[in-house]
Image (cartoon, rainbow, N blue to C red; front, top):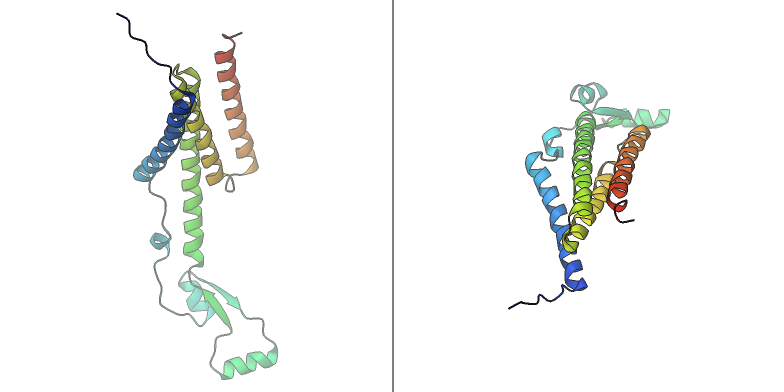
Length: 183
């Protein structure tokens, strides 16, 4: 006695594919965060309640002093009032260190996401089940978009060209391998 399996609806296949896209990219995000946490500003710039009123103490503490743009009369009035002739950005050095660390972190996450994206796209091409194939391929595409948005502003022009060339070459190779058999 044969049992007849009803065909899977397209809506159900696409619903499963969309769920796979969401869960795969959430998995990537949380796995990367668990393995390598993102730099936090407080780790580089602890709260500094001190106020610096002169350039030397500001710079010694890792800040950057900026002189106010004052006329000679305003300088005289400011000095008589005992006010500083400028202001201190006390977090100047630690902000620069934090920005550098964040840029390196974003680059590393970008590289990991690009590799994972390409793996997902290749899986999407070669997995024979439609819902999984669509879900994996679109997971890779969404991950590529997330990776690009995360690091693109930090990447220099040659790095962008190199990354795009490698991704394009791999996608062309996958397309030729997959679709040459169907013609």
